[in-house]
Amino acid sequence: MGNMFNAKMETLPQNKIKGIQLERLKKTVHLVYENVPHYKKKFKDLKIKPDDIKTLADIRKLPLTTKDDLRLNAPFGLMAAPLDNCIELHASSGTTGIPITACYTRGDIEVWSEVMARCLTMSGLTKKDVFQNPIPYGTFTGAFGFHYGAQKVGALVIPSGQGQTERQLKLMEYYGTTFISGVASYAMRLGQVAQEMNMDPKKLKVRNGLFGAEMFTPGLKKRIMETWNMDVHDIYGLTEMCGPGVSTDCDQHDGLHLWEDHFIVECLDPKTLEPVDVEEEGEIVLTTITKEGMPLLRYRTRDLARLYDQDICECGRTHVKHSMIKGRSDDMIIIRGTNIFPGQIESVLMNHTAVGGNWRMVLYTENNVDMLTVEVETKQIVSKYEMETLAQKLKNDIQSVLVFTPKIEVLPPNSIPETGLKAKRVIDERKKV
Ligand code: DLL
Image (cartoon, rainbow, N blue to C red; front, side, top):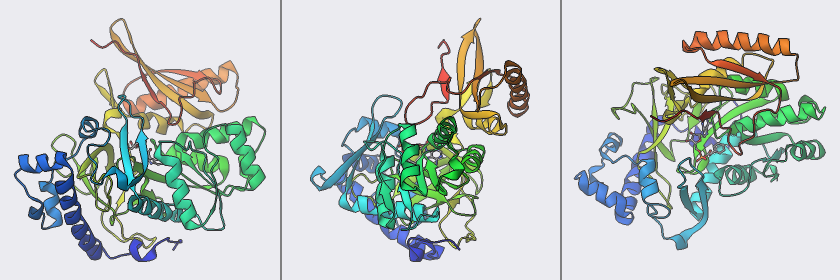
């Protein structure tokens, strides 16, 4: 059994967790009803009152909250606490221009630090570690979440911040960093740059990494593990909940434990909004039950995953597990009638050792027909012949998974432009009809 940050809560029997959830759900429902006009109106429309929530199953009586609700009420309209009681603001850039903003009370920061400390300890962090945090410190929640959690564990935190990959690697070497965090694709980039600098990442002292914030396929995870000779864990979270810290996979690496004493999770069919069966894929819908600043009821994350059966995990934790996030429902691309998730393509690419860390899908229109080119960087500079052979192999493999044949363009390392914090895997230049 690995270390736990809060063994009592992490191993609490399910019936006790359910008891805590009900009590906290009732409190949250009253809090938003009394303080957030948006929810008061929704309750009125649905003809419900806070006291109608008597059991956990009653959660289904509550209104769902969508990204549009957040945007229409931006930036502070969904706050349940006065801004005077808030001490920090975070926002996610979003793709539509209006950022999703969340303000935290001191209590919210305390809860966030706690869940992050649990996730980090689950991934192997101890107070003996030198923890490097190569994430921009800014309104993005990533850096601060890891920072607070790692300090709570008692590790030595190096707040190395944004980018400058060579500098990050030199800091790792100089300070003897043992644990790194970050955005999944950046871990790959760090490994690639190390090799370009003739530095062998395996010879550094880094032995653990906790990454997330974007699609994180098992193939990419394996790649990072092999490049660095380190154990890699997956962390999920979103600005609307707290930032990173909603769930992480334990050493069993067969699902992410979601902290049920702070969040209630449902998995719904995105079309019917009915619960899907256990282990069926659906949209993750989350209710915060300890947040004070901006509590949210039944928030539709758009993230697709499966919830696993409620067995006690080998690691001893009792909190429910979900599969890795397959992608966002809005990530799905429909091209000539075929549904494609970027993760399906990445899974194929990562099976080929000659493929580097960076790749993207470019969609465009040619003679009124939708076309897809998958651009893939090689790990090292190779001959034209090797590039062509690789392109052919990738084409065959992708075709067998997708029943669709994209064009493949194999490129030398560093050909695809960096797009900032999270990798941009899909460029859609199709003419909108
Ligand atoms: O990305 C919080 C975070 C930071 C998580 C660092 C983990 C590590 P947002 O910018 O609000 O917050 O983006 C949230 O990113 O709804 C998912 O679609 C995606 N996402 C986050 N973690 C994962 C993951 C942060 N482990 C959105 N796997 C979420 C797949 C993830 N997708």
